[in-house]
Length: 483
Image 1 (cartoon, one colour):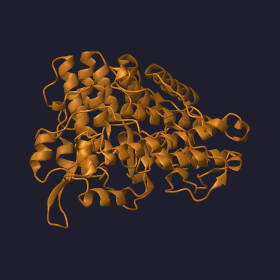
Image 2 (tube, rainbow, N blue to C red):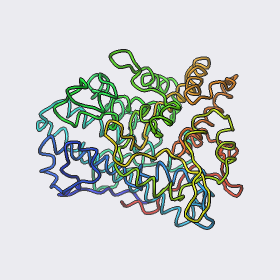
Image 3 (cartoon, rainbow, N blue to C red):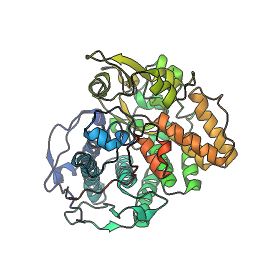
Image 4 (cartoon, helix red, strand yellow):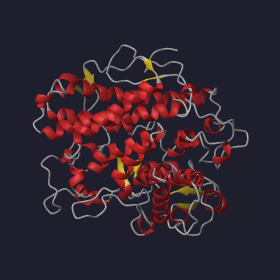
């Protein structure tokens, strides 16, 4: 199997000069030589902004790893016969179209990692260009954590079922930007490097991140009237960045994947228990009011880290309103099969709608990414969820001592207005119910497939799996690994 060759930026890096709200921009505006880009603090800021922009690529978290490819693996969308989408749901990993999807994801993830490594390769050598030590800590911390984030998803897709590390080939953990192929390393070494990146990221930003001091409302409304008025906008809007609590949430996700339940619970609990200075919860679970009154279908107040996508409404129109991504034509598919016909679940009643397409067909579509086209920024919900509080509750429910775990699970259920359902009677029953919630909670976010793989779940657990599908959780590494 070929080694990976990584993109080196040589003398040019395609990042750019950005407006004051840098990371909210859609595309970089110009190209700069690397030695010029990294000669100033603002150059490092722009380079990191470029990483976030790359993450919104459709081959990565813009679509493939959230709304399309990973969701199609578990047949969350209706498909047309004899298409790549159908073959994804059949786990036909020999199909050229399917392999093309996987190659795109692989390539895009390592391109993002290459951009991150370009920054990390320069930041300590040029530390003197930072006029604000906090910005240095932020940039380096975010790069390390984002590198871990991308590598974890590579592992969760192309790596082994965690309970059987021998079930897939070794993978490379790219820690430097180089034209020299990097070695494929063991599962344990990969794990060690990933967790070390997260530990280093946490140490750089802990007790320094504004998100620990200020509320989400203040971070969304920087200025004199909010009480949070940074001189540099780069410090604002931390909920859209890989902030301290996002690092803790990613640690919880990673520790759960690696089977370290105690550390997973410890990390998730820090996020759940996070408070503002006045004692109010920093993050809160979404409720029916968020859907009905605020039209906040993506539940922004429980997002610990989300990617801001200015064109998300356009994406919603082209993918969902047009019927490209749809599920079922009657209430049975969504209300009964997916949610169990509770009659109260806020997702069952408020997150889906029946629409009539141009061909007169009636189909159900999810409204998760529906948003106003040009709202005021403080009420702008155009975010792609990357880490959410609901996941932390489910992780805590699974990893805490049983009695405490049930309490976390019931708190989650209460927020979704299904708190009256019988509580699980033992650990296995609790785990089974949690797995069902991954299916319901993270629809169009890409997390359900990973929950199935982590648990090596049988096909009976995958609600919409076709009868002809031959379940396979380990995606093939692209034959040509040259990026």
